[in-house]
Length: 218
Image (cartoon, rainbow, N blue to C red; front, side, top):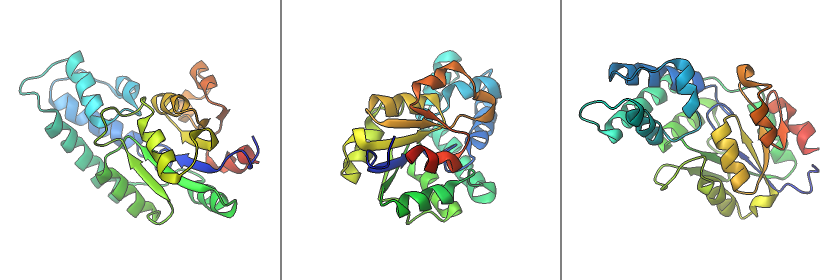
């Protein structure tokens, strides 16, 4: 890939900009367990990258509980995760360097996430990134979140760039599917315990962290 072929870089958020996947998993485990759902941290990892209401729906159909209220459970999880991010959230390795590199190369910078705007605001505030993105798109309010490509297509449209000339950076397989379905170039940065799994060959590039982005862009 040359820098001439890419006009925009679109970042996923959870697990790419901020080390929030463990927070999500812990809060989901606590909330779902309290509802009687027989989950483990390992099984919760299956839904990484999905929008929170889709996660709640998934687990309800696996192990239904009384008085099902998706919005109430989803909000409880989101509010607790946002609170934890503001308290203890940390940037993933290379975040600020990667954004500075994109800016220096004159690339447009976007954010496309399944997370709700409450989480987006918490992350951008915590990491001091509020003014870095030219377009911010959430799957909140969309009919489908990732792995559906709509949030990525919306971000490309907001940036004014053909999806073919966008590079999407993802840490989850559901997110990678969404970016590929949007016809974008892709970089996968799997969690360390998932590196080496065969499924990541679906990405155009694999990386250990955002510090690898300059070498990928060329």
